[in-house]
Image (cartoon, rainbow, N blue to C red; front, side, top):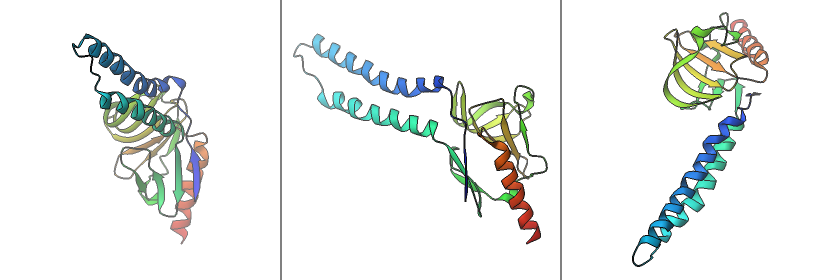
Length: 182
């Protein structure tokens, strides 16, 4: 089994976990402000402790998931757990002759346009998208300048931002050649 690391997203993506922390804190301020305005001054303590305990855990999990993405190539295929629905794509489903590493700034037809399911943040796209050329794509994009585009035989596309996209493409091609010989 081979592992391929993604390019970590930019720091701007950290605004989402930060929001997960700040929104509950704002709610706490509102709860205490309303308790002071309340005649009896009672504070609903269950509502106070839940955000304090849950928000940091959720934010930490989000940071871990955003910054530790790996893709695995095994005998079963390419494991893409980072899309909305984890799945393994058999090597035979890829049209590797048309696979390429592209700069999406120079290939606007491949730019993800409409999010179907997943996450779209500045500097981070993960999930199912419809491309400008109308094809469906499973994407994990953190860097638009060097994207591995893997067309599937059914007409859809897998697009990945990897630290070494050429290594994954070469490994897929070697695995595909091994299958055709064997």
